[in-house]
Each structure stands twice: as structure tokens, then as C-alpha cells.
Length: 265
Image (tube, rainbow, N blue to C red; front, side, top):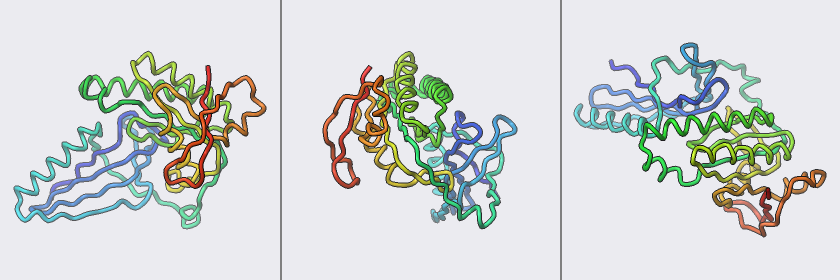
């Protein structure tokens, strides 16, 4: 019986970061798929990968072995085109006590979301090899600034990064520093920040605060850092950071209208 071909943990993800994994297995004319969020511990040969929760599974019956083989090849090629890497080791189920599994970690923090503008067009222009190198430098620059500002990376999403900070000033300082750092790579980013309570469940961030931050980031143009009124309120004691009124906005899927502010300088 053919073994699972495990694909999906990006090479830039090291200890403590969350990513996604796919497993593709063919048995005769049947395809078995398994996918879900995974957590990475360690790096290099000592790296271990765990499912953060029970993975989703799907069975596809292709009628003929040739069709199944073609389906499997296409599925694998698609993942590789998305810059996933093959995994040679197993993906284990993390053993947690019932008490710990049920635990939801709640926190109040400033949430930052950074996203590359026009990434698809730039990737097509540079080609896979060059774009992969650029993305590697991009993540290195982001993580360097996060470390300097004492930010905590929660997850990477394609070419985006989600992080949290204890203080809003640290998040804004980090955002502007990331902007300057990635310009040397020929990249332009947009950043959104919001302050609120969120919940971490199974290594994923959930809650309205996360969705609001996502919508704030979506309102930013290339080179802009936008913050919500919640961040503005917390910044009253930090007059050194300039925030210009960016008007009232309807955030998709979020109740009421929100006033946003653009970071100046």
C-alpha cells in the first residue's frame, strides 16, 4: 500500500509556529485525503510535526487506477506550486489531557496583521525560485522586528503574518519598522492593528477582535498602517506617535461603523 505523501509545512516555519499539512494517498482507484492545521516543534532533522486537532478526511473514488493516479499527481503538484514542502516523517496526534484540551486561552492584546500588496503579480514576475528567496527574507525581516518589539507571532497565512503585542505603541513601532525593512526587498505591505480580547483554541486565533483587525488591514493601501479607534483610545498617553483621522468605515461582517486612523511618520 502506498504511503501518505505528506506536504504542507513551509520551510520558514520553525518551532512554535502553526501551518497546514496535506496528506495524499492512493490505493488502486481510490484517493484518500487528509488535511488540517499542524504545529511545528524544533527545526532541521529534529523537527516534529503534530496535528493541532483531528484532521479532516475525504475519500474520492475515481473508478480507474489511471484516473486516481492523475488526480494524485495534480493534487501534489498544486500543493508544491503553493510553496509547500514534502514531509518525510510522520504527523503525530498530540496527546493532551481532557482538561487541557477543553481549555481556551483568552487574552487582551493589540493584534497586528501584515500583508504583502500585489504578491501574486510579483511572484509571477519573479518566478518560483526567486520569489521563494524573497519570501524567506521577508519572513526573516518580520520576525527580527517582532523580536525587537517583543511581539508574539501567532500564525503565518500565505504571505501574511498575524502577531500580538501587550502594548499598542509596541505594535505600531513594529509595523513601521517592518515597512522600512521590507522596502529593501522591493516589497510593499499594508498593516492593520486593533486592540481587544481574543481566544486561542487549538493554536488558532478566534473571536471578533481578530476579524476586526483583518478588516482594518483590508482597508489599508500599500504603504499604510491603519489602526482602529480601540488602539487610538489606548494611545492617548503616547502623543509622540502621530495618528491622523482616516474617517468612518463599514467593516465587512462587523457590527456598526468604525473610525480608523492612519499612522503618520
